[in-house]
Length: 187
Image (cartoon, rainbow, N blue to C red; front, side):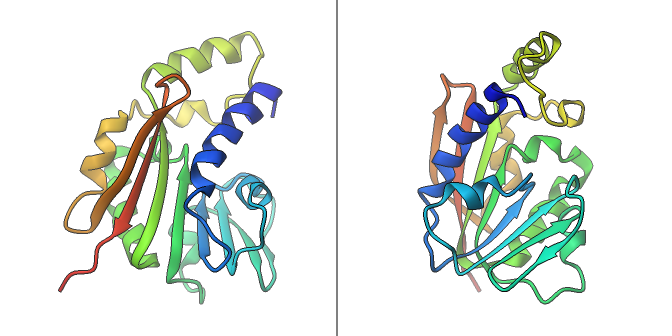
């Protein structure tokens, strides 16, 4: 990753770590190289990172990295009941036809009352990133997978009765969006 890629990633990480504490079990979907784990100043109770670009699985008592996609990488494992699920610049990579299944799987693996942290770039970012990539200022991870997803559509994927939006904010001059949801408990 180039410096600008890392800078943009660090801004997303800063927004997410405000909602994470050391007693949490964390599911980091699209974890890349575990930058979220490196960015927090403590060792969480448990951390599972999943990314299709991981070279191999790494498993130990406090942190696990799984090569693959979510939820397939967790099927048949003992992992589940996470306190926090993190999707930093991930939702725009999920094809529209898979979003409902994806949301259902996040709901399944997150504890009741658990927190879901999502960042989604503005649609304008695709053009900006393609220009920056053309001039070799960024690597632009998996830009070809962006599906024209609009940040406002996050609310139609993660909606009631499963989810309660507890925070929304724009950052990076309005080019990025933070959504924080709480998994609802209902009968």
